[in-house]
Image (tube, rainbow, N blue to C red; front, side, top):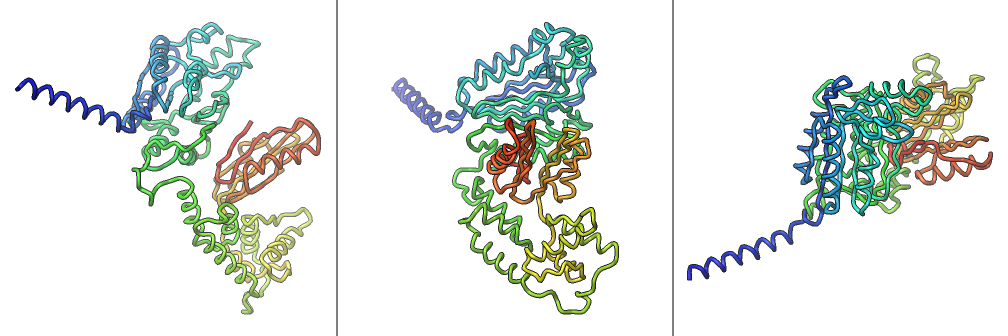
Length: 495
């Protein structure tokens, strides 16, 4: 009898375990991560943060239900072993992630991850002493899954300088930072800074990029696309805009490191959450163009009726005559107030500058026309009062170009038009007098050919790209998109 009871207990336990595993969501969505941090280089100065970065990211990923393969200060054999272990486990995974912090090399457009024992003086040292990033990516992209790659590997690299010197006439093959990587469907690859640039190692425990990543990946309900925007903004802020994280995505759906619990509809992200965030950012604004932008994006949205009412009320308000009080009709002559009028018109996308001095009058007349006010072109106290009531637009993006120097720059997610243009010109590194600014939900695109160029703005990134190609194509063949972005940084790409 005792044996029978034990048998039934064992069977019951086995059945219970089978049911438990069958009902476990994680088994149907296995998450696998390879995390490597190389700090203690033997033939180059040690890096401050990669080991910390890898340890902290690995701990966070484990809390997020990733099966983590971790390696710290790995030599060539150690890196090869880790990559192989990772590759062997990939067929079981629905989500695969690679995080690498340390030195990286770009040679002839290819990227290499550098072990701590690397001594790179020849092409053979590169081929047989480093890890070709393509080798890892091929394994990740062999099957249909979500692939995520974070490369905090764009630090100033003396090994690259040494290789460049040894290669002599072929030294031009060695470039700063890492090269842009084309991804297969289902993959996002993120660099700590833009292709060809060098990232900062940081003064604290973590690099600026990893520190920003650690702040966001465990936020409940935050989609990966928003994670990358938050990381980019954080790094821009902490590095005084010296470092701009860059990513290339071919994901076909949203990915959440930490999804909200099932049934939490009130807080569930996605299209409804994006619309809610958009509406919350403009609902108290006094700017009609923001409500127009909302209605363009969400013509049948949850707040579309309120947006139309607000828009009509604003149109009625601006259609009213300026206040009849005598002081409101006084023409402004104070240089400070005139400068404020110019600045406010500029931030509303009216350009008050003109070589013959007529720009301010023209900009005022355009503002009056769009606001359905009597067109006087006069700069009065009443006009300044109206401009102050409206406030400014945001966010701003800008594309600038210097045709003679063949240089250009692009900025996005700036709080003002002036700062966006300044940021774009800083990236241009030349005068770049040609400027296109766009705000809110608008997008800009820059197309170039040997015969001409075109920079246009539209209310959708694909429309902007196509319009730029069409306009550029009128001046000759061979047009291609050089850069494109929406004002908030979405849809961004550059070549």
